[in-house]
Image (tube, rainbow, N blue to C red):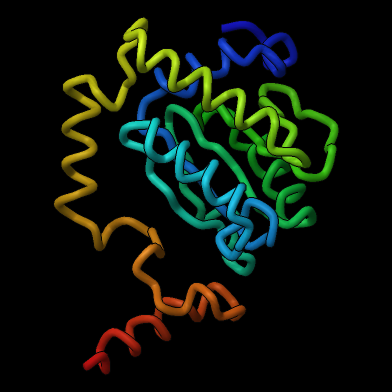
Length: 199
């Protein structure tokens, strides 16, 4: 694997990395651009395409108030997106300290940060790079030039474990409170209350 600086703008290499990495995580924060409360149709469509084309992608959230030490990262690949700048900078500092206990890190960077050693920073201030990256991933799928990790026997077993134990997935797609701008740490209790009293 070339150093991150060598592949930071090599779309084909990044596409291969994304598809071949085990247990890929998409870790989404609370920013209004690329975050869990983003309402932009174009960005939502691109994220949906990423989820559709990356078998076994595990989507989770990075709450603003959760201690960084409690976050879990993929042993293969974690993609960070939509995390507010102060939180993201603190998270990158934390990742520098635990470098040996997490896999590759892709930072979908909406702030033009100086790339960290060992991380891949992708330009997120426009949608063009992600659009082109997804086109490349879809082309690889179509030509069958690479078997995505999520379609290997290990990947299929992992995907089945996610389906059979949805309560273990910190995935808020079902959450009726998503449109409500409240602190993330209170969202689960509120959502559970709504579900309990649903008619």
